[in-house]
Image (cartoon, rainbow, N blue to C red; front, side, top):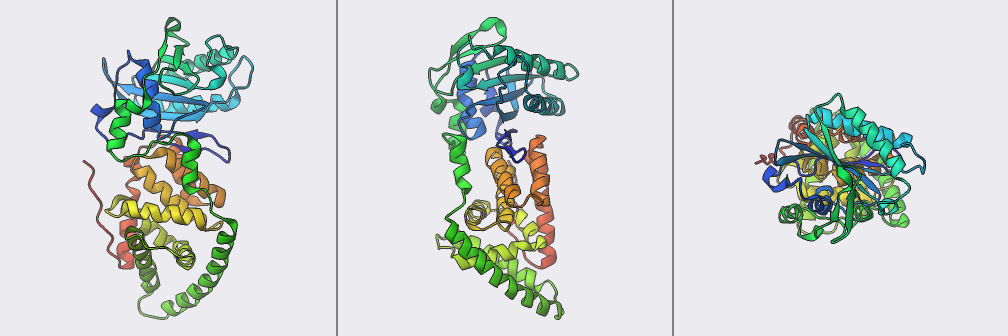
Length: 384
């Protein structure tokens, strides 16, 4: 999956194929060109200037494990940069935790497309460091492959294996790509296309919504005081959560969500119990429609209100195995509100390679919160 590692643009990817049949993702180690061609499908976008670690388990035909991606930082010297040392340590930690039997490093970078590139000394330093990190693990570094870009017929070469080389197969016809498309998962042409999913909308619209939020918050405060005087202190939360479900239903039916609706939802999600209840929607029948609502809010809400919508989007993407989108969403949440606790926790989980199945358990907390509020949410869809 992919996550916002810090305030920078660096990213980390774990296994976006999680939850799908391992047979769909069998890796033929003799076909390195096919492996490069599979990267866009595995990551959800076509990587550029990236280092990707593909972990494997089992022999002789290895099953795909965690897939990790990070921006490739080259310092131009003969030693690995401090940033890349940190990345490789992170990769090594995931290899150890996953008990991987093997790992392949794939470098996609136009700066080192030529096998005669002067950066090979720096790359050799990175390889040596990674091998040292793996010494205390059951994981073997199987190969280090380099290409200038992911494209049909583009040459790749190995930094190991006696300098082997070859050409890539067509990424669009990769068996992994076919499986992803059939599963309904989009493959973007670049990471910037993925970032555009939640690119902020026009400033004037966001300013308008900010003013509406202030008005809605004042009204919510008065209603909150009145609710406390009643015998049912959760009445306000119940109505708030029901309003979220109503907005999702409108999205599902194609109805427009107005600026006033966005402002009211922002105030609604201010309540931690309501927001945490909404986590459960990521595993239920309305998950896709809920995700579309979170995208709409993440594009149009001002800061820091945008953070709640972005973290709900990130969680939804995380549990369904779309690590790249999850990472970008968590990054947006932390940019909007650097102190957002839930965004920080999920971001760190993603960076450490925690699998979707593990964070899916958070949804049960959402169901418990909703039950206490008095709202029945759509039941979870059991994984195959």
